[in-house]
Image: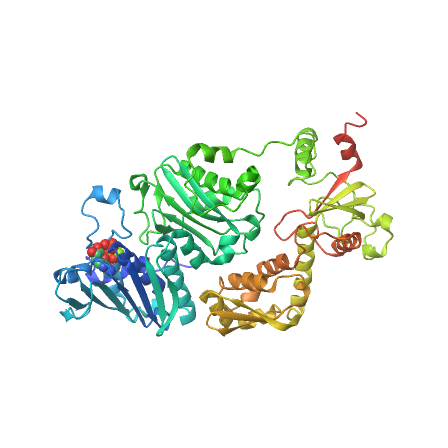
Length: 624
Ligand code: ADP
Ligand code: MG
């Protein structure tokens, strides 16, 4: 209102942009960092029919990326054309575009890359007497020695666009992204050998073989052992791969791979379809791991919706969503259905036919005469106005949980409660708000009796909350108290994990974790937070590293504190299926009473519920 509008800048005439600038603009979409170059060039090598691809990087790929393949090669006279914008050998008509079966088809990758770096192509076709080398910048073309195939050399990425170069991270981080790019291809193409070199050293190698072996080589034994085979043919779709079991879920979505016709995509629809299969078995922000390969006739999917081709559009998106969900559900439900199928699914078993898959989708038969806790709750919820499980607030039963008068917590303010009461644990059993422990049910619920009736506690969620608050309180003071490990725990780490451990060493120490590389592929943990005695140190370190990798070095703790602590707390909390003694159960209840907001776990789920005597009466139709 009070500042005058800026003066309109003088109008410039409309002009066509120079070719180089057009390519640089296009490069903005497809070339974000060395890893994007790696991705495009490996795409090209695969399209050329290569069975062996090597990726050689210097300084995280920023200084140079050299990709060599044994594919069909490019004839000498076509080398200059390959570098032109919108020049491609992969499509020639609209009809071709609608049934693309190659990774590339836009004809812009080489032009875009050459506009922001120094590129040279060296190639030889099968029938040529020798190879040729073309220097993109000088245009110099001459004979060169080479076997059949192509080498693309990319040096000094972003040398002429310093603003973009500034966005690059450390060499270790860029290397990690490059390796991840090759890993994605490697998962989809077990028939091709891949190797990655960095500064002259071999850092990754995957030899050609069968699909199950490749999944194991790339994602590790841990993933394979804690996942189930997905094999479904639904309508025109074939969905294969592996889906991680719910208890193998992670803090971060860093192990979720989806491919459509061999192309790695990050597609919201597909991710949602998978996620919904885990709906009932995965809580809050835990992330499932999976590698899924969806094959669909090319005419049913449009791959030309994103310059970097990481998104796709399906003609029948609802059906695809459903199919993905059902395929994963079937895989996850498999061992619960029939005992005969409970053996680990064989990787070699044939793709399930429609009918067989359909059978697996049906819910397990109800066991007559036996009502599980959950089913009882559901039944009860249908009749009673205030269900005691689920998201609705509980009936107004006065139970003072904390001395704070918090109107938001369960709506359970107790008008007459003495607001200056000392810590609940000093009172006698009769006045313990959460009552006296009586049993443990289903490996996860602690039952207690208080004067209002029955208290049901989700012991993992409750303990998680307590540990979380403890960590938070100690971090509030300075750093989380660290407990040195007598024997350091070492584990095989991914390049991203190693890079993160180096870059975030201080942040980790503040969290009570001393994690440092002892080799390019091994990390050693020398201390862990004292409050997390229960935690599996390797798993804890891994989750925290995965989380830290998402943030920049500055202010990590301040920005991500709550999430980090939640992750750590989850590892520190008692696991389901641990038998607790009555003493341990009572200790948990007393800790809950002392802990602020103990009625919500860190994932927003309730940690305990009251079932009043009146509600129990209603359940048994007493006093009606
Ligand atoms: P696109 O892959 O979309 O066709 P590119 O700019 O990536 O576009 O590549 C242009 C053309 O160069 C390709 O269509 C292909 O004919 C040729 N080409 C690129 N890389 C290779 C390679 N490694 N081997 C054989 N031909 C290649
Ligand atoms: Mg290409």
